[in-house]
Length: 430
Image 1 (spheres, rainbow, N blue to C red):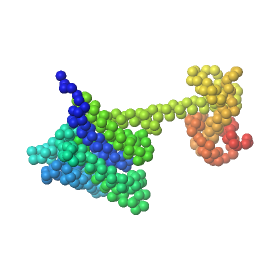
Image 2 (image 1 turned 180 degrees about the vertical axis):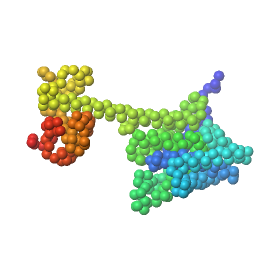
Image 3 (image 1 turned 90 degrees about the vertical axis):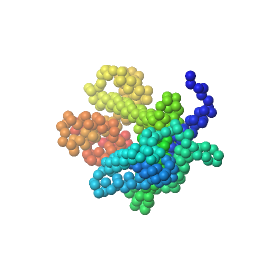
């Protein structure tokens, strides 16, 4: 029988681990926001893997994982990564994404080989490098003001503070460089320095995250919170704040889920982040699947209503072409809506247009026939091939475009079929 759970036990064994995961996630999300906005996610992936040789060599030279010497080694490895990528692009003609893939996989492999070859001489477990040891973080502590604080948590807090302060001090340069590097360079802003600072920040949060979540999960923490936030908001400060919130929430929920399910905490945090991203792709207000489906349905409904109005208008123009009563439930539903919105009258006899409905129908028919007139003049199409493209475009032409088409086709008052082109509501009849 399992021992009874107490909150004191939870606080001692899991509270610090959750706090460490949250701090690490916040730092990664903050830096990852700029990486995602600048479309440098792959370079962030490269740095998070390519710093491994620098970490191994620093530990071999006497540094401690998470210590200052190891941070210096990781930053040096990150800068070497960027230098090698740029050299391959400039001297070898290799595309940047290809060069990045070559460099980071090679350096990461070198780091793994060094870590395994030197396993007896350094305190660096290759498994921990890959997957982290978040559950054991509370057992490696240092004393701060008489309180035992996990070393990984302290490192994460320091790195988060340094990174946040540096990015805040260079925020204008970072934003300008992210959205228009050429303009920033023309204005004399230190684009190269801003980029180097971002890469150094990436190396710092990566190394601070190694002990907790490992090299694989840190990539998820760098990219997924920012990518999720980018789907939900548009302004960069809001994106950064939301990314940090998403990362922290995933760290907390992922750890709790891993504790209950007895699985890897770092892996479960990545799973929760994936769930958050999947939910955002569905529920995002502008680009989500629900929003896109709603937009398509709204467009289809508008087209159905406009088509029904145009049919009634053409029936008034040529009674012989009046539609029958067939059409099924969809036509009945459309006509019911048009009647409810005052565009069609259905009091007695067949449906007929009201004044607002007639004006809207004339706009649709005008768009259709103007486009047919333009196609008849500029495109070598048979007469019977003009209708299908005009039937699609009639729902997408605004007043300005109709005016430009009318100016192009001249004073024509009929389409290629000889049917009159209705005037704009503000125009006098010809």
